[in-house]
Image (tube, rainbow over all chains, first blue to last red; front, side):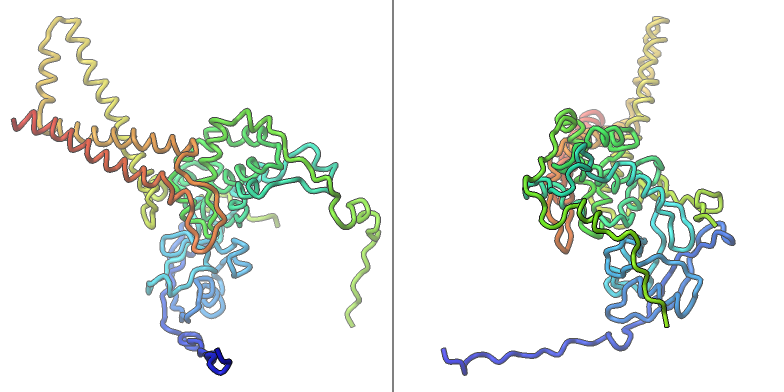
Length: 296
Length: 161
């Protein structure tokens, strides 16, 4: 083959339709609630121009900047990582920053706060009950020697990693907690997120805290309140599968309770982690940090 | 100022309850429908069991007084197409509730909920596309077949033959 026969590279002009000019106007039907004035949440309509890549969060911020500055909305990263903008869009749990308005195929976009958590204002709910339950299941590695050997790693095979890797993607947005039918009637139920994290740390081969966590989740308001409606997994924006994790947790409680309680956690590596040890870092730390230069 | 005390009375608890939670069907996945039917059938079959106890306890006065007609009259009054239609519903609900209970027991034993995967876009949760979903469809089919058999026994045999 001669070099001249090589095909010329084609340069495709990207399709910019709808990027510079709005495609259509969409009605945003937003749930509003001011605790000082209102007794019940109510809906208000706003007309928002929608471009090709406008997300629901973009629409809400357009309302906040141009139409009604009193709208309260919680958001941070705008790219589906922080989990702050969880809300119910057109009847379904979604992250507002990850939901393209045009993909909803609707001229009316109904936005309301997530369910089953106390409402503070407009689209903002109080996530404290949610995080308290998350704390309750001790979502960290528990073992006696964790303080003593901070300069070594614990050994773990790829197969052992795969057991829980899926569940580490949880961003604690609260969408599964909102979708779950059980949390709708039982305020004491730990919720899909907390139970999934309980399983994630219990099945971790480096962990030896199964007995402590079993005390928390083996409860009428714990793992046994789950009836496998699967709504949590269907709602999760990160592909975490809480329904799977809760069934596995039930399986551990039913068949492997004693084996898990007496399980030896993974041994530590013989190799000292490269770099400086914790003691050396502590020694070399300055007593006082240098203050930044004063502004001119 | 402390953090907003959302436990105060002016902040709605926002709990969706039975109608907005259990019976919420907007964008419901298949398992959620099964869950709702499981709740409904369990409730109805449970109420039927109470009614069934009240009905069959009529045999006690019949036995004590030695008057067989108390029992026979009750059986006669329940031998109608309406009562048999109620029994048909109970049969269908009881079969569904029992079979779906087997599915839930298997799921709680880790059967049919799949193996852990690394999530990749577009996300499809492994537990919602595993064997338990096929089992749900299979049990619905079995329920329909057994309900058809109950219809044959309750109506065709008793009222039309």
